[in-house]
Image (cartoon, rainbow, N blue to C red):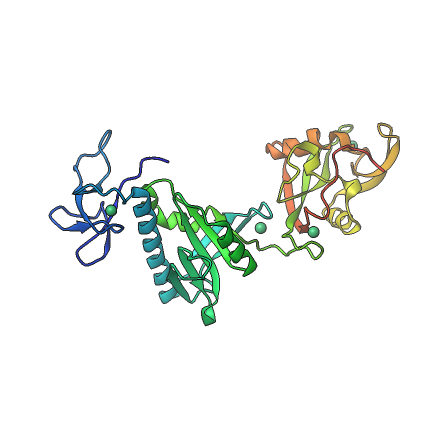
Length: 329
Ligand SMILES: [Zn+2]
Ligand SMILES: [Zn+2]
Ligand SMILES: [Zn+2]
Ligand SMILES: [Zn+2]
């Protein structure tokens, strides 16, 4: 935890005010313990100058800057969300999805009709609750400084299809970054991809990559197709990619429609036949063992041109790319 300062106070009208905007000679109070604060603003900038902040006039053993940061951020954020809802202004946000490994984005307030701070859900009081029509809680925003949401709260959100949006704070500077922090939350407990019909988990995106690489034999450019998923659950090397021999018929058809030549080829290396990316000019094929080093890795480094296509969804739980031991049927 970096050193957190009191950078927000309550003024004599009960409004939150940032130390950056505060002027000396006015009365300021702690938003948490309500006791008197003094504005510390040196006017100096540059190295060694402390950023503007407040200090308690008297010692306050039960008040911590962490609590003040949590309170201030939560209150300012709730005000912002409420303003957006009232004026019907969309609030774009995006996140890295923990379920499918992809990126999602949307309008945080699309369904939201009301915003409530410390809304009582009996088992918990989320920092900010986002309500749909008929008062149904659609999502909650939890602002985390020191306390993560409790297990029973997480269970409640999960059981009631309430989307948890979590923002982790590490510094009072996060208050100045409030707009960015809400548009890029640390955690969003949902995924836009369809769930697996078998096991109910969110599926990851299935991506076909078609790489333009040289034929090892005649050096003319050939198209090489592989399939991976957005989750990257099999991150190391080969196992992250499906070879054409593992493609489903519709995947083969799709690759062919993009100009990939897929043919059943006999491999001396494995003493067997399998479907492989083949050269249109000389008929040679890119063997499974060379797919990664000769095509996928160079394309990953941008050394070979490649194109990607979303070709549906894949359940990491039901059908992992079982690809570890390289045995071919
Ligand atoms: Zn205080
Ligand atoms: Zn997702
Ligand atoms: Zn060739
Ligand atoms: Zn599944």
